[in-house]
Length: 262
Length: 344
View 1: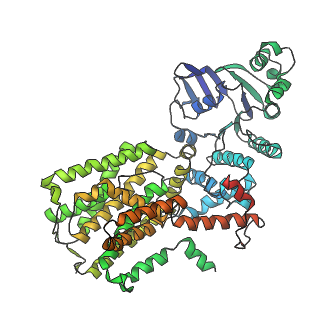
View 2: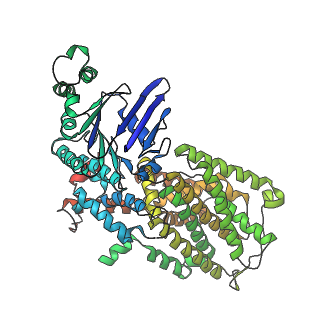
View 3: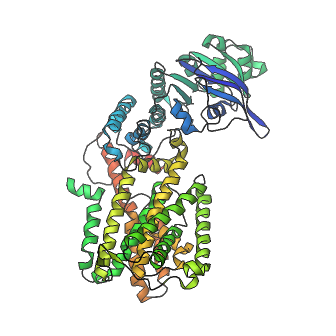
């Protein structure tokens, strides 16, 4: 069975069709990248899958179960989680607390009014595990707002992991992250993909081609192409969507997109 | 050193002791009903701060639930049970909670200015009802000359006894609210205050939390109102007026409720003592109080205890800049690497 499947998924904002009749399925494990020009509807697609937007029409199935229209807080409990394009975390919480809060929920303390949140042994133990995985053990008591940009991105992803998702949607995990930190983020994602399904929206084509097992191309709200890295690299439609007609013949989208980014 | 730092971190013992010996402090101690009022306002402001300081919601009509508490006690004593004070107070807490339970359900989705205005509007509705419904609330004249019952057979007419009864209620409230603030629920509230969408994506139904904490807050606001009614043996529509709600907002902000659990207590103490002492010198004391409020909030937006938080943060930064962790700080105000990032 498909992990996640959409059926004629459509989202309109007034006259604008942001996601147009997308039927798509996501299989077990590995990294799937969703690419496409700006305004192609990638983030809207994520927002639909995770319940932030209610689709205009169409259905979303998670392991066969219809989750269309459910709010985010229900969907994440069904093991579909996400991170954000702009790193999203609690700036005045320490790193430990940022992780702890998700763990509290998963271990069923969400509505506990009278236990002391810092003295729950099982929560603390579990939180420590994530902090260690983050590689921020020494800084766990530091307020998150003081982290470097790359570490904030990783913290955001780690927070999404605390509910033990089987599918993790990452919205531009390396946007705004530079040089060595970028490598750190990518290594982190690589490690994750061994255990769970990771779906990535990413602009950097070098990253896309290096981490993906499968690539889907979104343009003007529709799926333009969907295939292995090689298939996408050589797909004429994809090249046209990215480059416009006249540059079509100048080879792979890799260098072309590299040029565009500069 | 270690112990001092703990007191600094959580001074509940200091507060407990200060209020315990209050009647015996020279000069101020003889104003026992002032002491009771300090405690009552502290209860009110602590309950209010669960909504403002923890959930980050601007409830600008909280006086309504305080007022509901005063009338609940007055009406209970007048018509049903005048022997003890427990039943009237339970009614005050119950009705405070009942009103917030229903109203919280209606406004739990609203945020920011909409939330603020809806709470103000609600308090004005209740105010007009209290002001007009002569048969039940006594209308303009209110309900006066109530006969205050006993607590465990002890009469509360003596200001000292009343003070310690109020102290008892205050301590119970402080323990419960502090427990909630330190609980997972308290943490979720702080999280949704910082980034509600993020909290939802961690699986929290944030509207439910808003609704619940609004209700809890109403219970204690009602209780505080009930105590106020016992203190003055009367209930007036004035307590429901939105300007009263403004007072608790100002007191909480002034004390530093946004960043510190004890801010509401500090703010209440300053507000009530300023009112008592300044007003005896000058009728326009509100001018001074208002002015000092403006100055403090302009320079320390997080309120008086915001200074404490600022110092803590400075130490926090220093501890990470001088070697990695656990290193003791030098106490120097050196501009630090991560400090720059913060000021950006």
